[in-house]
Image (tube, rainbow, N blue to C red; front, side):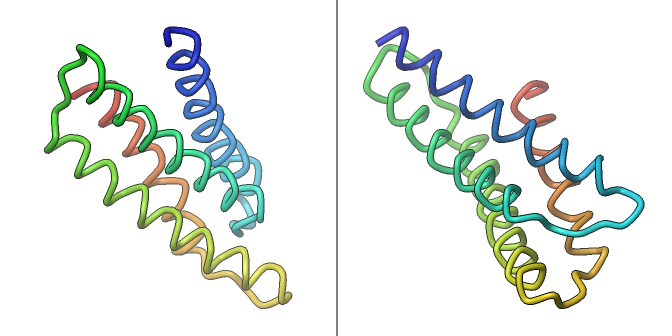
Length: 115
């Protein structure tokens, strides 16, 4: 179980890195790339699996923290979905939407590490 937990943490961090990395790479011309949406889904799924594993094991789960992080993760996924659909249709992606995906991801990482 330790390996599975570590692997899920790896994928979870990789998802955050992809979202933030693509956001920073496109910061001068902000847009939402399809990879950010896929990374947001990766984060959402791995986060839920990690909480489930902690609930089954000896880990203490802070349900308030998990609830707030889940709400933010859902917002990121929805914003990334909307942005990537606009990107695929060659429609302009509002800068607020693109920056919101990146900023909310950074906020979620901050909550995970500092709370």
